[in-house]
Length: 137
View (tube, rainbow, N blue to C red):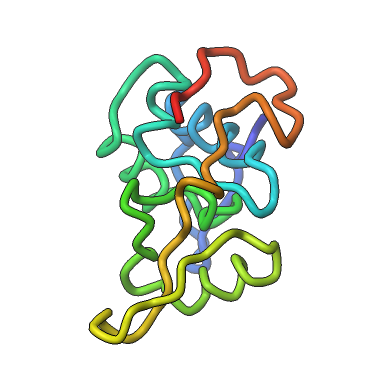
C-alpha cells in the first residue's frame, strides 16, 4: 500500500519524504477498522507486535490525515484534543457508540463508549491481510 510516491510534492512544490515502513503498517491497520468501531493506540501497537501507544500516536499525528484517523483513539475514550468536533461528526455519521457527557465534563463533549466501540481486529469487519495478533479487549 503506497501512500506517497517519491515524486509526491507538498503545496510549496517540495518533494516529500517516503513514509517509513512502520508508519505504513500503522496506517494499514487504521484503514481496516470498520466504521463505528475504534482501536486504541496501544491496540494498534499490540496488533502489529511492535512499537507502543506513543509510536502509534506519533505516526497518526504525522501521517494519519489520509486514513480514518478518528478510529484510532485514546484508551479512556476522550476525543482527540483539538479535533473533537470533527471526530464527533464522524462518530455520529458512523454510529460509533458514545457516552453522553456529564454536567461537569469540560465542553460537555461525549466520550467514546469503549466497551461497545472497541474493535479487536477480528469481528465486525474484514481484516484482509493485516497479519499480527489480535488486540485484547
